[in-house]
Image 1: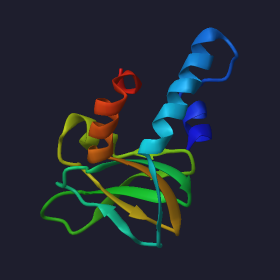
Image 2: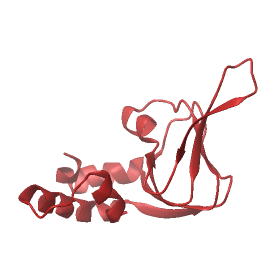
Image 3: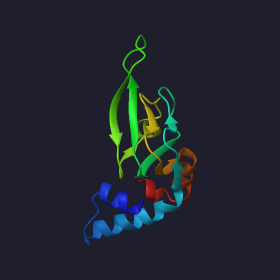
Image 4: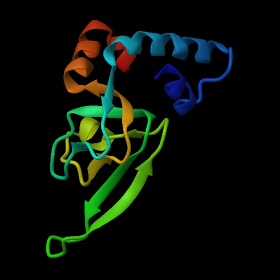
Length: 129
């Protein structure tokens, strides 16, 4: 997860800010869980409040949405590949998800639950600033 977040946040140098940000990442690691899910596992559905923030370590996840309530067809919004993040809209904005997420192959995810986010805020508020 740390290498995914270093790349995601573009923390590459040895300057003071990069060193500080890597220390912050070290503190975050204990709050994330690694989960393995089988192919076609439904991670969340449309109109569901997101309970987790997801980072993809291995595999592939597809995000799809209904075209309309009258049609029974789905529209692929995106494929999330290794290093990708999803679920953040519902997680941080406390809104229902506008799409569903399905593991299209066996996948390994790093997840941050709302409970662990609250725990991180209480135990290490500087990590959430």
